[in-house]
Amino acid sequence: MALLTSLYNLIQAVRGTNPTFLTEQHVPSANLKGKWIVITGSNNGVGFEAAKSFAAWGANLILACREPPTWELHPAAAAKECKDLAEAQGHESTVEWWEIDMADLGSVEAFARRWLDSDRALDILCNNAGIAAPARPNEKPRLTKDGFQLLHQVNLLSHVLLTLRLLPSLARAPQPRIICTTSCVHHLGTLDLAHFDCGPGMVGSDYQNNKLYFQMWVAELQSRFLKHPEYLHITVNGIHPGFVASGIWNMLKDDSGSANPVIGFFLRRLAITSQQGGFAITNAASNPVFGPDPRTQGIGEDVGRGGGKYINRIWEASARAECDDPEARSRVWSKLNEELHLEEKGLLNILGL
Ligand SMILES: NC(=O)c1ccc[n+]([C@@H]2O[C@H](COP(=O)([O-])OP(=O)(O)OC[C@H]3O[C@@H](n4cnc5c(N)ncnc54)[C@H](OP(=O)(O)O)[C@@H]3O)[C@@H](O)[C@H]2O)c1
Image 1 (cartoon, helix red, strand yellow):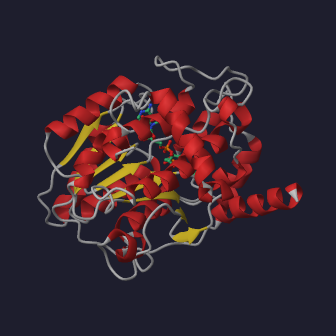
Image 2 (cartoon, helix red, strand yellow):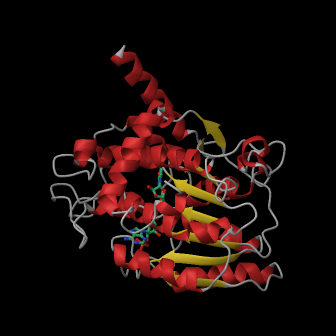
């Protein structure tokens, strides 16, 4: 039985390498004029590509990025490119980059305060920033100044904190959506709460475990929204952008700068571009099918299926069984509360829980 389950999960993960070439026919332009979007990790990779589409579709955009290493595109240049695209389409929208370092909870808090001080309703939050490995091969996982493993904090903890801080602003939007970039490899993760922080000795499985927790949190958050009249209308989904030849793989290079030969082989043969990967985010943000379900959320179009889902590129797919297990999900929820002191910060009270 265990072997069959592992095989099933492996097949689900491999489905994430579907290289179908997407066009505007799969993800048509949407009118996002007047909407406000915050997107983390948007100076590079799939986040940048999604930001460019959002800009061309008329949205006001905040690129939530850190001061990057010198070899990465600077967020100021990314924002300029988005602004130019918006103007080329005749939009006078706001496009700015605001600093957020997902490896620093204080920076996440400062970003959230800055947003809340702007007193705007937030229509779309894209929790996208991420890293693939906590350390280079043979290096120990790095700790952040908050005392967590780098990958755990950048990919999961900071997004949980950011989302909960921004909830009051999301709640003010008519049809808010939260899109979390999880991954098809969440299917290969293990629910291992004893090593929730992806501690030493867990390097090989850090990433997939962490993405599993993220996808479970997405399902749990949606189920809690549905019980709360103030947040009922918010839709949160997890997406896998595809197997994308983005900069994320650079972290897996060794000290001489050589790529892992196995990953290099698959990247050359199977990977899609970041532009193709970006469709996963823009589709989840704009497709009415992935919007609110009028039957349970009281708003939205008839085709709306609501949230808590896992979307493989642009297609709804099965998430790992744990995502449908309320008891397992609530253990992840409690663990996040424990690590981030969410209750003490009053962040669970706003959910009435
Ligand atoms: N590529 C794939 O095959 C694949 C598959 C499944 C899921 N994903 C997920 O997709 C998301 C985007 O990844 P990508 O493939 O587009 O990779 P990418 O090109 O490396 O982009 C990652 C983004 O995250 C940002 N980031 C990293 N550390 C940060 C920090 N401490 N604070 C703020 N921002 C930070 C990066 O900023 P800098 O430029 O400053 O580093 C960059 O903008 C990630 O969550 C990843 O796990 C990717």
